[in-house]
Image (tube, rainbow, N blue to C red):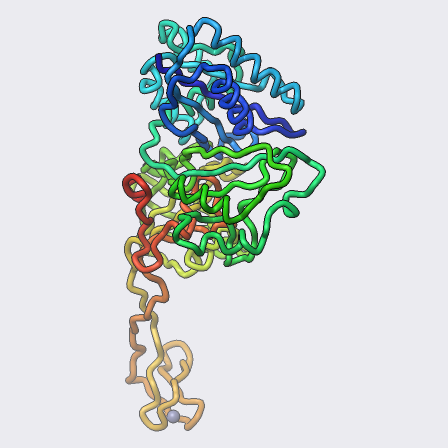
Length: 440
Ligand SMILES: [Zn+2]
């Protein structure tokens, strides 16, 4: 029988990581003979980053396999492994979400994935799901907030994905940086054989693959090919203080949360994209840019933050340009919903005209206004005229159509980062299945 296990919220501020819990559980399930056949890579699913009540990293995990033994003792076994993990890493049993789904009922949960990815799912929805499942969905550790993520991870259809290889440490005494050859790590993305991306951000000169904080992950290598990830790991040669590693299939870097919406539906705690005409561009102190966009249904305020690396292109927009803005909507006191932009697409560039004073027919200098209704005068040779009129000139725009996305260092988990966008065509590159760009 097919079994799907989903987990969320197994980390704590003192350590632990939900992916690590799954790594341990997976190993125990195989060791104790529960697994007849694995049905896919384990899933690491990132959910709506704008939901205020979320677990650290907002990542939930799932494992799908064909069960070998009588399923009667599977549930207490899984609960035992998870509880043991929480004891080891001071996690809270009340926060963890554990969901087990039997058979193909996982396919009926894809709407929960999309809602948890793009909107806010109240946990009361989960009660209804359990009741309506005829025992095919079980929450053996009770109904917690983490159950939304656990069920969403099971419901992910994995139609667009990348991979992440996570390496776990066995010792917390040695700093991560001492275990990894940083020179090799800085160059790993440059070898096309590995198909890794965002290990290192050359634009800011920062290692991205080594996390900070107390969790057990030494290194997270992102890539488009599992075989390439293993080769990259061999190249890096981490051997000391390693507990083990695992490859997840993940919705990271896919931009799957960019659902098209009308401006009036871009409510706080939702994610999405709107397309419309720029009505205002304002530079804010500190390097951020405030845009107002009208899509025909209304106006939306959007902020392009300096850290995304998109503020330069945002600043060069003018009234009348047509753009698509994608990201997450946060609630700002006194303002309401504000879109935090992660992807900016320039769809159409408006013609920009400026009024210019005529040149002096006598010496060629640019004439100055002689005052209201007094025509023009030349400050160089003294020529005066009331006949000449200012000319309307078309200004060249220093902006081109296409996708603008953050560099690796400025990209969030779900954001499509710059290495996955073709530099020449400005179109997101091909992933293993389908194009990343078919989100709208
Ligand atoms: Zn002159």
